Length: 311
Image (cartoon, rainbow, N blue to C red; front, side):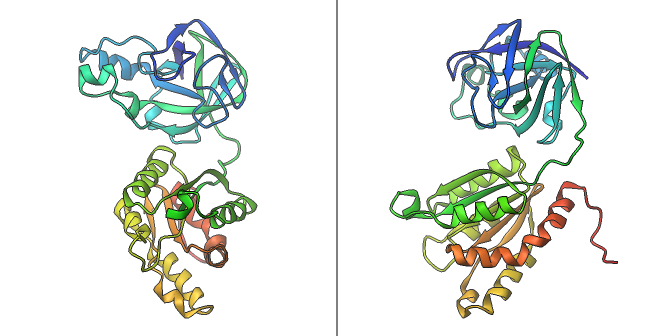
């Protein structure tokens, strides 16, 4: 159980927020009147009072809202909780959607201290049930009555697609297939064939959003710009060769060119990353191979499945 120590808002992004006594939290929007509210996954930001206190003991001297956070709560270590955690505060129900954030520019706090705790300790949430929160209200972690749906992202690698010279057909086809299979696709990105850009997004989606599944399409062949396998392996914690091998084996029954695929499948943290080919037809054929097996695999990563024994 925690206690709300501060509520902070601002009508402009990129500035310190101002403390208020009470605020209204709107469903799938955020705090009424706050610049970060909207139809996205980072509607409300939260930071532990305990982390701020420890930072101030180092001489930071920061007040509530200095990090751009909306809620400062004492007694809950948000950083230790998984994405999908439900937080109840009066009538308001929040669902954690992201842990940590990218620091695009070093703020005054970083310039003074050499670090900023918000990118590391801050978390984000969306509003599931509305209501008002007042300073001093209690916040609790609410157990989930149903499992969090499988969370996924789809990344298309294409120089021409990213430049607007070619329509991306594979990405939307994969999204439709996942959605029909019960997945919630939280992000769909179209990137150029650049290794650094792909690695950056894969790390963000695995570490901050903690997604169950990330499917890439494109960039797995012999072309000089086909860097998807190398970028994927560069961020991997563990290799999962069986999925990529199964896709190639099944595809060889369709075309001998399947042997030219360099696609890989790996794990980072608790996220499974699978490279798919570039064409919509080949993507669907590849998904035929592994889609039915994914719930068991992802359950193992989440810890909801204990073993792989067959009976």
